[in-house]
Amino acid sequence: MGAVASKPHLLPVQESPTSAAARLKVENVSLRYQSPDGKTFTALDNVSFEVPDQQFAVIVGPSGCGKSSLLYLTAGLAEPSDGAIHVGGQKVEGPGADRGMVFQSYTLFPWLTVRQNIEFGLKRRKLPANEIRSIVDFYLGEVGLAKFAEHYPKQLSGGMMQRVAIARALANDPQILLMDEPFGALDSQTRLQMQQLLLQVWGHSKKTVVFVTHDIDEAILLADRIYVMGARPGRIKEVLDVPIERPRNLDVVMEPEFIRMKRHILGLLHDDLAEVH
Ligand code: ADP
Ligand code: MG
Image: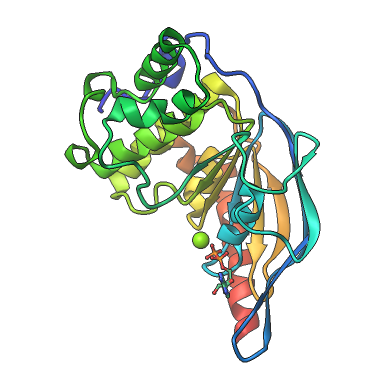
């Protein structure tokens, strides 16, 4: 995987077979959990923000601040206690193919090959076989797994499995891609490669992305805009634009703007910890 995305702008840019991208609108969303003893726990408190279409949004915040909850609500896997979420003007009322998800843990079907995993949603949509084949081939190429199409997940490394998960999500042509700490379980080298690969794939597909992480470096490297969350109760503390030019590579960590942003975000997260004690 050495060649993957080290020079994103030099890779051949093919016409992406997918096109849709929509904006996300989260409006006054609260989420409360009821514990068995009747106490109410507020996981998200009146959260509002918008992500314009084709933007790369990163949500960063400490463990337990409600990042996953927010993605679950957007995916339609849970319902907000108050407020509403709209994707492309449509109110989220349940799971749908317009939203693709990539989770931290590997969610591939172990009994299917890489190709069969990626084509799973396309087959359910009953697209013609030749169309399915060309979409899957495109994304196998995008994530650098053309030679592994007939492999099974257990024959792949963690990074490769996440590349399959990204290809599978994008092959379905979602309007928005929701990613919950997708590289959190990977070793740091693989993680850096995956960040570059994701930037390259996103550069081609230009999907709206909402990416959750607690890693500040990862957030600044990837994002157009960073939404910093705080905990107890979970809320958006600050929204920051990342004024660093693309294409970006790992050298950005040395740029003054990167360091300035990192300090600022660390400060915000530190304030949050201080509030507890
Ligand atoms: P994050 O992803 O930022 O770590 P989560 O969204 O997973 O945060 O969780 C936010 C808060 O909500 C945490 O304090 C967590 O313990 C709580 N929580 C999550 N799911 C449930 C649930 N099903 N019932 C009760 N509390 C929950
Ligand atoms: Mg989480």
